[in-house]
Length: 430
Ligand SMILES: [Zn+2]
Image (cartoon, rainbow, N blue to C red):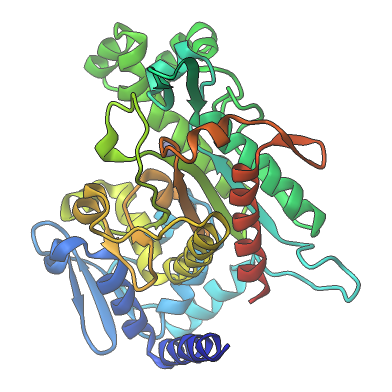
C-alpha cells in the first residue's frame, strides 16, 4: 500500500514538473527521450530559449517554432488530416505568426476530441478507440507469404501427432473482437481495421486482392505518377511473395492508418503477438517469454529526408502524443505482466530492443519508428503481450474452450484483451 502511494506521488510530481516546463522545454524532453535515435538528429534541430529551429540535411533552417506558437501548431496538427498538416507546415516555414494570425488560426481549429459529458452516461460514452489487429492470413498459403504463423510438432518423441498451429492474424483478430465488446459495453465507439481474421484492411484476403485488384491498383498508381515506370514494371512482374514484401505490406499498413485517422480516435491499439527471436526458425518451443510495448519515435537523420516523415516527426515533437502514448503503453505492459504473469522485457532481452529502439522511463515501453507508430495521429500502444512459441503458451493459445459473451476464445487471449481494456479505461478516465 505504501509502495502504491509513493509510486502515485512520484507520478504526480513527474506530471507537475512536466507541466511546469515551457513549451520549448517540453519539446526538448520529447526530442531527447523519444525521438532522437542515438544522437543521429543532433544536427537537425536547434533549441534556443524561446524558439526551436529545424534544419535540413545541409544545415539550412527550414522551420521555426516560437514559444507562443508551439501549442497552437500542436493543436492544429492533432485536429487536421495529414494533407492539411503538410500544407500548414509548408505555410509556416520560418515565419513568425502575428497575434492576428494566431487568433485567426485558433478560431478555425475544431477540437475533434472534445466530449460533452452527460451525468448518467456510460464511462466511455463519446470516446472513440481504433484497433488494428496485426497481420492477415489464417491459412498456410497466405500465412506462408507473410511468415506470421507457427507450425511444428511440439514433442516428436512422446506426442508425434500433436501439432502446434498458430496464426498471429487469428490471435490478434480474436483479441480485437474481445476488446471491442468490453469497450462498447462501457459506451465507447470502436473501429477495427479489418472485418475478418483472414482479411487485410481492404477486407479481402491477399490472394483475392491479387486476383481482383492487383492490376487495377498498380495501373492507377502508375497513371497518378505515384509509381515511376521502372518500379511499376518491376512490381507487375514480381512473384506474389515478393510483391507482398516490396509493395503490399506497406500499402496495407498505410490504409490501416488512414482508416484509423479518419475515425479521429482518442486512443489506438495495435495488437500483435510476439515470438522469441532466438528461437528462429520457430520449429520448436522456447522457455523464454517477455512482455513489451512500442510507441513512436527513434527517428534517424535519413528518415527525415522523406518529406512526409518530416511532417510526422514535427507532429510527434510538438504535440504531447508521445507522452500520452507512453502512459497508455505503460498501463498495458503493467497489466500484461500482472494478468498473464510474464516478466517485462528490458533492452537486453532482444537485439531489436537494444539496436532499433530507445527505452523510455516506463519499464517495457520502447520508442520504435514502426510505420503505424509514426502514421497514427493519436495516443497509441503497439502491444506485444507474450511469446507465442513459449512452451507454456502455444497449446493454451490454440484452445477455443472459453466463451466471452458469444465470442469463442481461450483464457490467455481473454487475459490479454482484459489487459488492453483496463489500460484504455484507466487512461481515458485520467
Ligand atoms: Zn506481429
